[in-house]
Image (cartoon, rainbow, N blue to C red):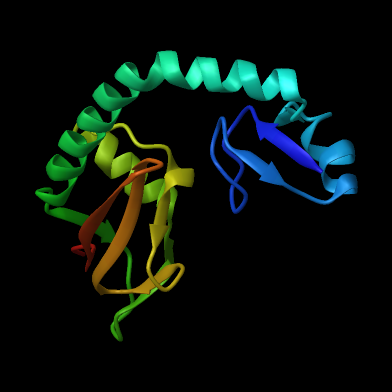
Length: 150
């Protein structure tokens, strides 16, 4: 079944993509939840016209995302967390913590668009995260987890 995505769906596609999914997934989940519509010939024509009109705006959005990516790459992020003597954290540093620290620096990024290499952070040290700012723009964020001073 071919559908047109109305919203970004993780591991499937981005808004306005035409994708093929199994019938049950499309009819029972994506369409009722408002994530997609059936890709009829008229819906495809309407999508093509919308994309044509949006091309200029899209170029401007990509340029803004690239500028934000350069700003994020320049950030030296230090996250203070409670840790034991061996360097193991009491808890973990999550993508929500990274999003909060970035927002303090003036970079508003949703936590669901941040992926930490290796999953969760449970020890002191330097790490790398990927921040998806746009479907074509992914920034690399270097951060360090340091122990909280007693």
